[in-house]
Length: 90
Length: 368
Image (cartoon, rainbow over all chains, first blue to last red; front, top):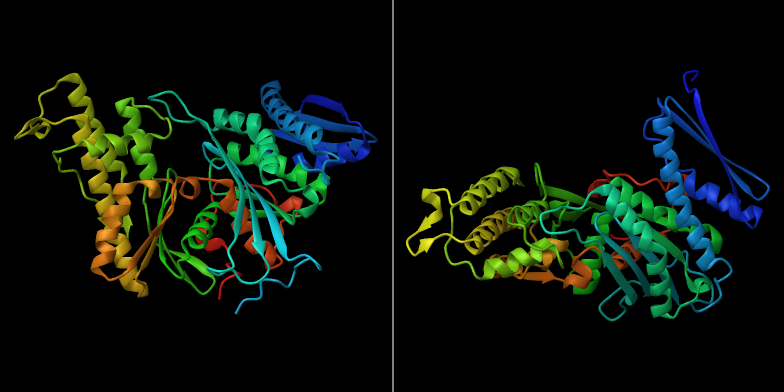
């Protein structure tokens, strides 16, 4: 897709590599609604979650990036509340 | 007889399931416990927590996908926390985390599944995606102990008459356009009445004060029904009423037709149509039980009208109250746990939600 000439890259730090992987796998399954206009790739590097947006316009990237950040907030809140709490009465 | 305990954990005499529901404007988290063995009236599922938070919009406004998703994101983790707290259980006791996979609004569904995926990975508990309609049906059956009823599923997004046959819930009749709850909700918007606790509830209260019946179109199409035309018709009547336009239909012998009369007439017409197709489905499948599920199922007048028909057929009617009728997490926990007990799990890659997910797509492995 050579006409994806707009890009944006996020690098999100987590406390552990496992957290970064969990975040990746929580976000990764959902398909991109318009694959002809945008691609989003998730990967991890040590404790970092890397998100690469490539799209036809900065507009589609902005919308997608906003959405990813919203979802990421849920993931992080979930980790804050429940990580290591499996054997605890909450 | 179906074997429900082939996947039981050794040394444990129960299963625990967490259910997350967010397909429309209700966000629900439920925790249910199943004892080992088949579920019977003496070996029942136990509700440990059933919490709901509803996104309520101002009068005259419906809920939009984006805003609803924001509401769910805002609350989902807090609701899970509260449900865990109320039930007093630990994560180590939980067998499965269930989420609504569809049908419903895309963005709200997606906002909830993200939490399910995260928790599932952190606590290493499998996921099960649940069909929302099947959730309603299974919860209704469990609460009411009805064996093999014809199911009338009526809510804001769905209107279906369903009967079970050979491990599928088969759709005998359904709406051809909008759902009955959508019809009521949108009329409530025209009237600019409150959406709290729900538009349908407020229409029901107004309808109780209605005295004059206004003839509305009656649109049963074989086993299906259509409601958009009725909505347009009654919307026009209401607008004429508000503008003070002269309209013969708005004159009753006792004087001017009121908003209460319109609510009453709308309910009577719509519910009569539902009763008709439900009765025909009962005759088709030779059943004399009716189970009403879905948010509109909490309408007492609908239950009453259905009861009159069922009584004529010497049958029985089963309905639940708002805790289980209106969208909730417990039904997702329950239906998902039934699937889990048959060995079904949903991999992360397969956990994508879908706005369209028909009731009859689900393989009902847990029933004979």
